[in-house]
Image (cartoon, rainbow, N blue to C red; front, side, top):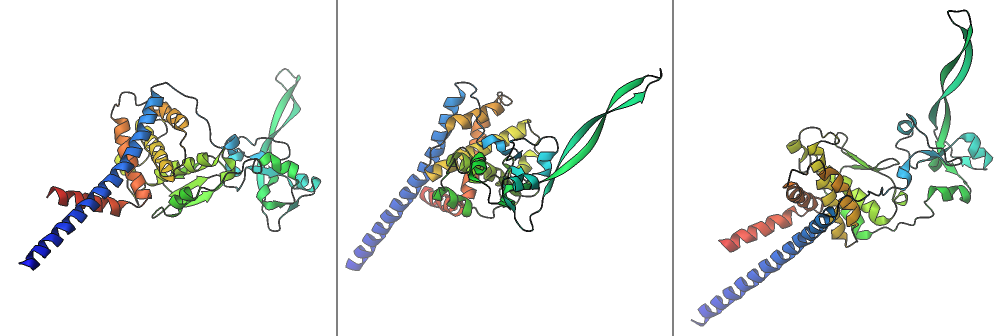
Length: 327
């Protein structure tokens, strides 16, 4: 009889412990959801104040330029110079003039331009008319990552010495532990994600106005990558391609911005809600008649965050425990 009572008491204690564990799990899970809801509410609050100017987080938008003269390369040249380690270039002659040296084996890239000349040509009346000729020419430039001994006064122009963006360990851990990640390439140009290549391209940390801008932008592109068919397969819901400015593109952008905000909250860092809501505002102009947009996008963003943080097991366990409690 005593053993029966003891067993009954042990079973009761075990049930109480299980119940407490379930309550703690549910509380922890709900706290995470509350953080996301708080961010969403803050964004809504900002949106209600009207459009806010968007601040580009990348210094000078990383446009390719000549380090010595400051000349911005235009036309087709940004495409030719893309995927370089920095947006700063100079010619062999310029490097020699400042006593800098080109690294052995470094390869140059061409910069093209139109040379405009004049010539005389006889018209139908027999008179000489001045005509203009256009000849396509080029010269070669080297990226400064392939040049050594550049004087400090020129390196100051790169902003790398002026902005000492710190590495945020919690933010880096999220990136490092992203399951089944896409390829990541640090290069100059506009931050982007290519679903075809399954690749994120983003400038180095030093080219952003601060560390938070870097990680927030990185998370935005990570959010897009989470929709790839190898992961959450979100793009199939919206068609095989998303065109800039259309409704489905706007939905995906909103999902990515919310995901970035939620991930920044996970790091414990401050989030610039004004900049986030300003970007979202531009898309909401297209989607103003869709009053379910923010709720639907928040749900997708939450799913993306859980994937990036590898929480599928935690969520599965939570749902199983909740089912057991109901039963």
